[in-house]
Image (cartoon, rainbow, N blue to C red; front, side, top):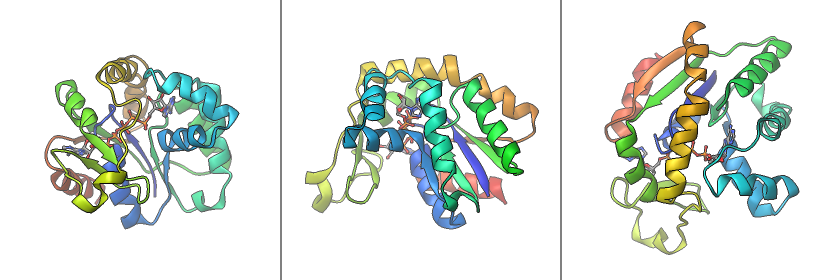
Length: 208
Ligand code: AP5
């Protein structure tokens, strides 16, 4: 299965992708997670990405496309993948298309997780992640168990100001890829409003 998850920041892509990769036994490729790992490791690419991420701007296409090309060179992507947060611009979508064509493979589906902007800020501000397990929580909607509370982290770009920039970048730069996949018949729209379990149920029925 070769899938892409598109959706605004905080739509629940990471939450849902983690559940789907378990079911389909495919790698979860999140460009956001890869950039955060590079920032943490202090690599030159991480330092460059950090400048954009902190303020909620997109990392330049050439850096992002290079990162994904390297990831695709790893053998675990042969059987399929779940892309989360990539592509996010028309040039990224074109680069992905070219890479898949060169490999003689095709995408199976593109899931668009739709959540209105008015719900996004609350989801983002309350998000906490567990650096040990990668689990994503929300202080209200998916509260963490007390025993992990002390080690949870709040992302640097999960501020109200950065979220506004991220939403703006989504509408300006990412929304234009929706017609690209709609025209090719791959796009499936999923209502991302509801509990995480309800959204998983909608996605599962969409994929069967
Ligand atoms: P990235 O990490 O991809 O961030 P994002 O797209 O903004 O998405 P998020 O991770 O914020 O949200 P999500 O949809 O995964 O939601 P989650 O499941 O966590 O990118 C970060 C930055 O990296 C970008 O701003 C950019 O700078 C750079 N970058 C990354 N990829 C790039 C690219 N391709 N090109 C250029 N730059 C790139 O859920 C959010 C919260 O809501 C959680 O607390 C969760 O518990 C809660 N929640 C989830 N589902 C529900 C639900 N159904 N109901 C209530 N709460 C819910």
